[in-house]
Length: 160
Image (cartoon, rainbow, N blue to C red; front, side, top):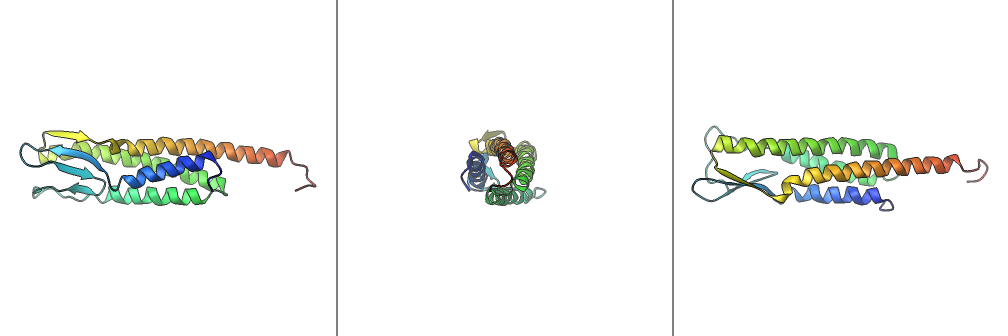
């Protein structure tokens, strides 16, 4: 399974996307009170939320779980390069969608909750790094597939 370099790229993307569930993304600093932490699962340790605000960020953890499961499946499909490449492309698109949703929520929450300052953590760029690692894996999968096709092309027909 880990015979090719692209498997290590996919494994690194899997680890980074799994870490998103445990690390904070943004810390909001209100005028008074303790800081509020926003993670992939929503707002944590918020003192009190306004009546019109819903702490319903179900799309972020759902997308995170789908990405982790797809990366795991892509790692297991090491012998089916065409399907592996298609699923890796879909995972790369999902990484971009996750990053877009995280940035949207990062800039939308302060307007709704009247927070004066926000601090981004390094984990906010994990989906972009995962996207780049997945693109590198896609390129590696394609090169490996072409190399295997070239090897089959030049083999004599009578010998296996």
